[in-house]
Length: 335
Image (cartoon, rainbow, N blue to C red; front, side):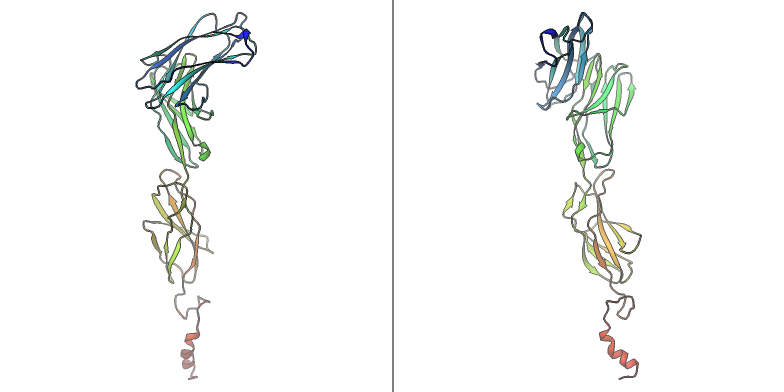
């Protein structure tokens, strides 16, 4: 029990509950008392759930103001699956009005589900490629009130509102949360929370894993050049980004042309056919990892030129006609 008039504004009192590990469904129940004769707020009662000795995180349930000269019962449904463990912290914060009392009593650990707060099923990790949308789907069972608030808490304290809530039945619902165009900075642990005046439901933390699509560090290597083909080695031993690599492709174009083509490759060497003689081409490698948006940027290009079609061909200014002089003299009658 805290008498607000005997403390300064913003002062806090804490009760840290014992460490718990849920091997079966249980419910943490408690009662609170918040009253001021003139209706002023004595302060705020906050409830936190720490996981595996980690940071305090965001408030999972709170109440403030004056609520009559009576006790109110609240339930906390924490879905924390073995071997993970958690601790509940109760916090009383004195208001600037400093009037009335805050009380906490009858903290009970019950070995059956909460009746006023829904329990979440296990929340799984989400693996997504950078730049894509990440979706968490939280399934809960129990009785949800009409005023139930659904949110997702990031371990660093950020809050994500629900994109949609679908009631599958009168005792089961699905809450969907979406993070748009995620990057490596969004990679963290997230959990689902429901809140109402009657209590709160808290899921386990699940990890958002953001992978960077792969890109080769070096350009492909030229193995052989002909007048209508180029044989190259992909050279993909070193990459920037994340694997595993599930597809390799060659993207090539004339350096002076507007078009480009992409060919799938299943070997480390590849032969580009039907090329134009004495033409310069730009060749890059594309790598893809699993999932939508898994194709990385083209790697550094190899710039290579096909050979001339023949020794007397006028297509190639690089060709040498020195060896043809005897035949030219004979044809012209010069001996």
